[in-house]
Structures are given as structure tokens and as C-alpha cells.
Image 1: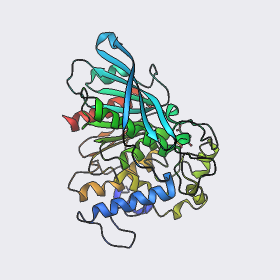
Image 2: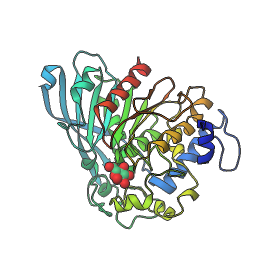
Image 3: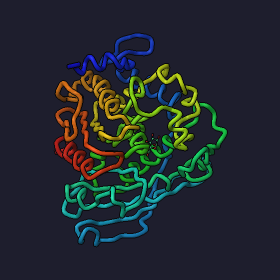
Image 4: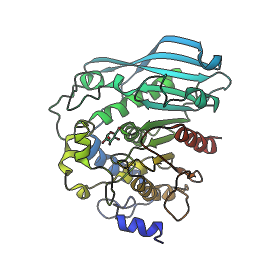
Amino acid sequence: MTTLKEKLTERDYLPVLKMADGREVTRENWRERREEMLALLEKYSYGHTPKCPVKVWGETLEINEKMCAGKVRDEKVRISFETEHGVTSYPVELFIPKNIKKPPVFLLLAFRPVPDRYIPVEEITDAGYALAVVVYTDMVNDAHFGDFSDGIARHFGTTKDRSSEEWGKIGMWAYGASRVLDYMTEYRSDVDVSRVAVIGHSRLGKTALWCGAQDERFAAVISNDSGYGGAGSSKGGCGEFITDFIEAGSDDWFCENFKTFIDREDSKPYDQSFLLALVAPRLLCVGSALKDVFADYRAEFLTTLHASSAWELLGERGLICPDRMPIPGDLFTDGNVGYHLRDNLHYLSREDWNAYIKFLNVKFK
Ligand code: GCU
């Protein structure tokens, strides 16, 4: 049987612990390597992120004390911040269990607002977590092919004629999620901002990773079925390629430079493992689904394993797992890098939520 080490050698991912000029990465120059990997991801994949706004504020729109049979306070807030082109605002919904003082938080980048069958509010809050939900299209639309006319895009003056390194929608959604953390840090003494996990599924799994990679205030980063452009490298994989993103209408998720790698994907000067390594030494959990062919669980798993060297360098345990490919039902929680695989297709299932709750329970408590 091929060992995991042999499988990684076959994939030939770019080394995380080697500088572009060939120097070995050590604990002493880790920050320098971090900056280098961030710069590569900005330049070739997600585009540059603007500076944080000076101030973020929130206005409570509605409070419902009766959520989950009265166990949960449900508060709708509109958060706002100044940009060069005026104030931008979008809603965030907070679900806070009443029986816990300062619960840790899942900050979910969501496709739709609650109620939604993929957002089990009662299970999450019963497990002792608060939940903050930000719907991605409230921050900027996800229309096909270069519509930058609303929300964060409009307020930062991004247009269809972006320059090659200008940010795309993933960058904007990630930026928007960080502003929710700004708001919670400043105004929400009822949650524990030192234990916030940013989580997303699919394109929003890519977004959660890019958000947590840049913003080191997030204690944990969780990617569900994020696939290529997220937790999985396309190198040696059997999932999707850049043209698939574009066919899916996701022309503007990444920066323009990203498209120059069409049909030469393996020549990229960075690898998705760089994105994951930027989370080190904090908590990372990657979840995959066996039959999610596009997201390619093997690539997600091996890329995560490869990135795990960053945790080891920094004195933490990375991904601790048996020497075999994962099987459905696996959940690895021993190291600071978690991984889980379930059966079935591409969605954020209860089984995924339960795995992430278990992972965080082990780590946070
Ligand atoms: C498309 C795209 C994927 C993406 C997915 C989603 O299938 O090609 O990369 O993850 O949409 O977000 O649902």
C-alpha cells in the first residue's frame, strides 16, 4: 500500500517551508515566509485586500427572545463602515445561547439567511456556541461575469475593468466577514471574541480560508467542501480547474491574474497549501464529502496534510491521522489541524456541523 508520504511525493506540491529564494524556513523567519505566501496569494489568486476601516459600528434592527423555545436570543444587526465612496452596510444575525456566559462563536458565511436547512441553529447553540450569520450576497452580489455594481465592490470603486491584481468577490466577502469580527470585538461583550471560528461551504469555504488566512484574530478556520481555490490543490487532482470556475459563472471570484493560469495550472508560483499554512499555528478544520467529485476530497486531504508542516515548525501538532487515505466517518481532532470526511455529495450537512463542533469542543475546552 502506498504510504501518505509517498502520495505526497507523487503530488509534488510546492514546499511550504522553503522561501522563494530557496532558504529554509525556520521559526525565526516564519513571519517573513508568511508575508511571502500572503503576497503570492494576493497577486495571483484573490487580489489585494484594502486596509481595515477606521471604525465599524452596528445598529440593532430586531430582537427575538423566543428563538429555539426561548433558549436563544436572536438579534439582527446592521453593521456599517466608512469607505472612500461612502458608508457601506449589511445585516448580520446573531444567535446567542442564554445559558452560557461568553460563548465561543461560529461566524458563518452563509448562502441564505436563517431559517435554512443547512444552518441548524438549535443544534449549534445547544452545543454551547453562539452563531453569527452573514449572507454573502448582502455584502456584494454573486451575479455572473463581472457585476461590481453594489455593496463592498461599489464602495471600493472596483469595476469590471479591474487591474490584474485587484481583488475579486472572494476577497470582498472575506473582508466583509472580518468587519463582523471588528463589530463583535468592539461591541459584543456577550460573546468570546478570542474564540471565533470563521466557517463557510464551497465558494464560501474558499472565502472562510482566505479570511482566516489574512485575519489572525480568528482562533479557528473551517472549510467545508471548498475544493480547488480553497483547501484543495489542483496539482495531481481530479477535481475542477480554472475553466470550470469560469463556466460556473464565477468569473469574478478571483483576481484577473488567476485566469492567466488556464491550461498551465501547475506552473503557479504558489499552492493552495500556502493558504492553509497561513492559519498556523491556530486551529484549522477541513471537511470533505466522498462523492463531491468537483471538490476532490483526496486533494483536499493531501493538501491539508502537506500544509501541516507549518504547524509542526511552530511547535504545534498538525494533522494527526493514520497512514492511509481517509474513509467516511473519519474525524481527526488530535492536532491543531482537523480533517473529516463524510459520505455523499456537496453540501453543509448536520454531520459536518457535528464534526466541527466536536473538533472545537476538544480544542476550546
Ligand atoms: C461551482 C464552482 C466551485 C464552487 C461551487 C460552489 O461548482 O465551480 O468551485 O465551490 O460552485 O460554491 O457551490
